[in-house]
Length: 81
Length: 109
Image 1: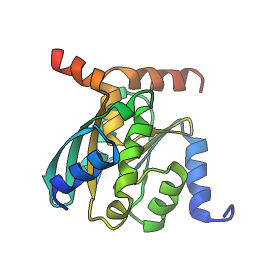
Image 2: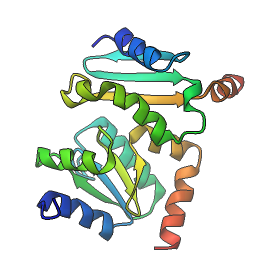
Image 3: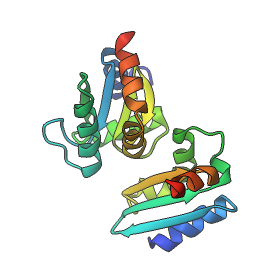
């Protein structure tokens, strides 16, 4: 799976999200900024993303998908550091 | 379901240990970079933790993911509660949250 496909699927499922996905050979990492993460725990945020790739993760087409999930406010904080 | 020996052994591991890491490989010989990193995080915490190797039987992983509703390995449980995978635990270690959770788990253990 191409990183761009992963990013598109995330951005489609979470309208307004910005997903930056890197990687190859079944191992990927994604940094995702979305308002939809607000008020959710990190576990819930990561589950929202993993749920989009249930089949690919089961088939090992995606072996690893490292996640960094942020709300827009957290992303702004991070860039101010 | 209650008689499934794999489910029973997972539940027993969660009951018997304050901190359990389900990993690929063992504490001494992790077989995956993400498992290795998670084990390293807990070594640095300096508190006892148990590592269960999921590799000997692929069903361990299937049953475990049913329990936690989490697709990847490693998986970390503290006092029987699912805490997260490698990314979450690494982030929690960086911002000091993990130490709090670990200390609290052991203060009431």
